[in-house]
Structure formats: structure tokens, C-alpha cells
Length: 281
Image 1 (cartoon, rainbow, N blue to C red):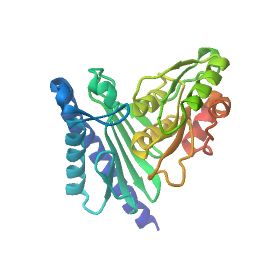
Image 2: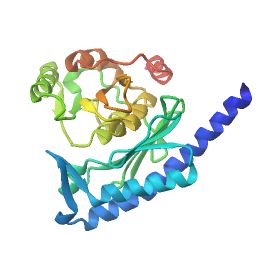
Image 3: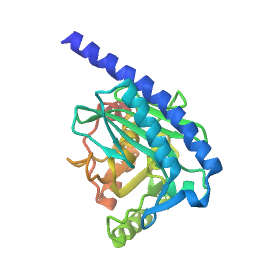
Image 4: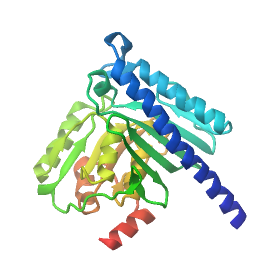
């Protein structure tokens, strides 16, 4: 058994090192594209859903690097799709915050998650415009540019700053209801148009919560692991979390129960990392 565990640990460690490397190399492609982009490089996938040439270039780079290094791993990307049926799967959003990217707003990122046997083991979010790389490995905590991070210690809604994501997959009235309930609690509510960065900001204490009524796996898996490992509370993924996606919540522990009630998004049971953080607090 110990040999099996050691083999697994070595395999995860190998993938963690690779994840950090490809996040930065992909980030350079994204940043170069951001600096030289032109209006004719931007298309619409749907209402308020942008696609740029850089999305395709970044995803192609990530897929090629992963396939070369780990040919037996599956790959699921936002733009090209792929397979998520195996035991070992990489889930990638090449540019999260594409609307910002398209409008010259430097608030966008690359999100990479590694899922093994249905559990997210590795998560990385890289914002190339600010050169910030958030990283988490399950059971090992979360970092930003190599320094440990933790969620904020906010205990009262009157001091809380929450971020909401918006999705056309749910009625606008649901979003407005959720926002009004948080405002009624006394929280400040904002929206910055990158769900992955919204989750990263909860992990490092810049926001006290992030909620969205529908997110795809490539948008949220890395960020949810970051928040868990930083001591925050998160929602459970739906059973088809690598398929259709679902509602997502990440929040500081002291406001978790009330925020879950206000948003209607159930919380997952406490993880080991969250238990440790609660005992320290």
C-alpha cells in the first residue's frame, strides 16, 4: 500500500511541477495576444460570450504540452472540448475574463485544474497582466507567487465585500434576488467579469465571497481548490461537475452559513484544510 501511495504522490508532484511551468508559458502567449489584439480577432460565441484568437492559441499550447508530457491523461478545454471520462484529467480555461480581454481591461487569467479519480488535486490560476500565479495542491495549502495565502478573517457582513458572477443560463431575476439579499445583509457587492479570478481573490483575502449560479468546470475547479486550501468554505460540485457545471459558492468561514442561505447554494462538508483553519481561528 505504501508503495502505491508513494507512486501516486510522485505522479501528483510531477504534474504539479508541470502545471506551474505551463501556466507561465501559456501566460506569456496570453499577454502577447492582449498587447497586440485587434478588433477583427474578436468574435462572439453567443450573447455576451466572446472568443479571441488568443483563446485558441493558449488552449493549443496547453494541450500540446500536456499531451507531450502525459499522453495517457485526458484533456477537457473550454474551446476544443475533449474527454473527461478517464481517471486522470486536465481541465482548462485558456482565457477566463474574455470580455475584459476584448475590451482592453487587464483582468483575465488562465485556469488549470488536474482531476484524479473525480477529485481536484491541483489548481493554478495565472493572471499574466499582473504576474500573479495562484497555486494549490490538495492537502498542501495555497500560495500566490510562492507565498502562502489564506482567506480573510471577516466576521460581519457590514465589513464584507462579495463578488457575484452572472450567467445567462439562469434567469436574470435569480441573480437580482441573490444580489438584493446580500445587500440587505449589509455586504458590498461587485462584479469584475472573471469567475476564476473572483475565486482566487477569495482565497487570498481580497474578497470575502464569490457566488455564481452557473459555472463550468474549467472556470471553477482550480479556484475552488484554492479557496479550500486557503481555509474557506466552498459549494459541492454537482455530480456532473465536469459536464454541464452548476452553482458555485466560495466564502470566508464566519459568513458561510448566511451566504449559502442568501444565495441558495449549498455548502460542501468541511475539508481537512478547512477544519484546520477553523481550529486555528
